[in-house]
Length: 344
Image (cartoon, rainbow, N blue to C red; front, side, top):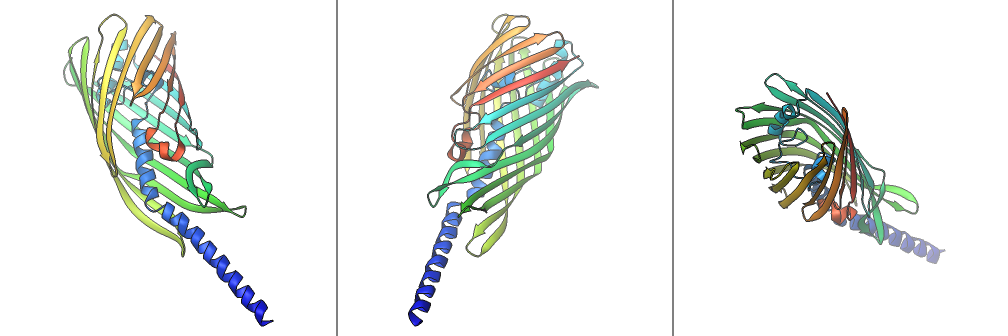
């Protein structure tokens, strides 16, 4: 009887030590991971093409006189097309090679209001729980992301050749979950909720000639990240702040009829990340209603086309690796983008 008790005690100690080691290994694997993941996800979304017609030509938009541009100073160029307004819906499924399929939906509206132009954007992303590249105890952790954002911006023409603009996101929230399984039972490893605190984007666009345009955009973001993380003693809650500074100068030229060539440079800092990216692209209208686009977004190939029929415009783009900062978590991220625009 005494021997049996000793065996039971030894087995119990071994099981407890194994569970502690298992939990500790998860904790060690995720020490600081929530913040790194939050920085990578935030930076990926800030670098993501706003629409396919931008994405197809290498995600060039800082110096592009287009109402689709993320430079708020460019909104005023809606008037160049003799349009009063436009509404578009953008669907962009990101098919990560080792991770969840992330569905991005974007609904935007832009309208001439007063002397300037107003633009509203609603952005939603979501995914199902799927295996990722992160591993612990020989098995891949599963991960999922979801989030939403609302942005409002206004572009104002100072002169015929110079405009400025300002936009802000009063709503910008993301959620990240990682889980694993122990003997078939799901266990939450880490959960992070990011909420925007301060955010603004200010831009300018200068066109000394009709065929050349210079733009520059500065963006500031400060987010509050609440993390729930598994430890040997249970779940631990922590709060951190992510600060992001991004500067994006760009130039675009129209060297011949129907052709556009653009170049952007993105520099910035997002906590542990230093950003240095180049974007290059070309667009050529084959007919007044059909154009093709090619480019390179941070050394990754992009391509697309645009087709207009009466008051409707369809744009498509392919980007080889659209969220490069997430590669260590989800692998590469080929993306197909499609937008339907109605103009009046």
